[in-house]
Amino acid sequence: MTGRRSDPIRLSDILRSVRRLEELLQSGYESFAASWLSQSAAIRELEIIGEAAGDMSATVRKLHPEIRWKQMRGFSSFAKHEYWRVNPELVWKGVVEMPSLKEKLARVVPTRESERADRPNVA
Image (cartoon, rainbow, N blue to C red; front, top):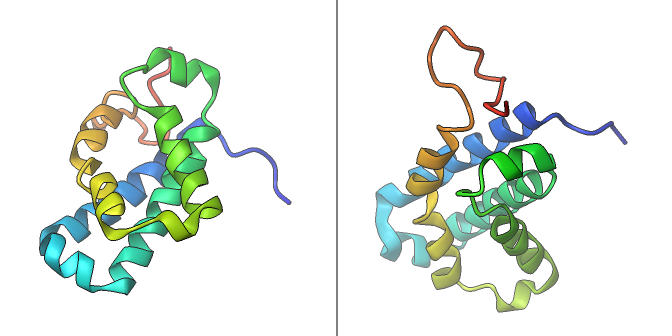
């Protein structure tokens, strides 16, 4: 077992999953709903987002209350522990939130080239 991952690494994990989920948006809901593979991929990326969000430091969570950290963690837990209740419509609702989440995360993670992408805006 490894040690605790840092906030910048967790933010990077979240952003990677957000980008992957945005790819699913391109094909639309009908294609998504017809593909168990797309649904499984989306659930996995939402789980990663939830785990990373749930382990963010209290400092980052307090500085960025506009991000729904608790709800992201809640879906991850729900998908793992009540998997039989997960359905394509519910997962899609999470997927369509990705552009908004990405916009909010841009306030946490510096995006200018002069700044390191692995340094969150926490102070």
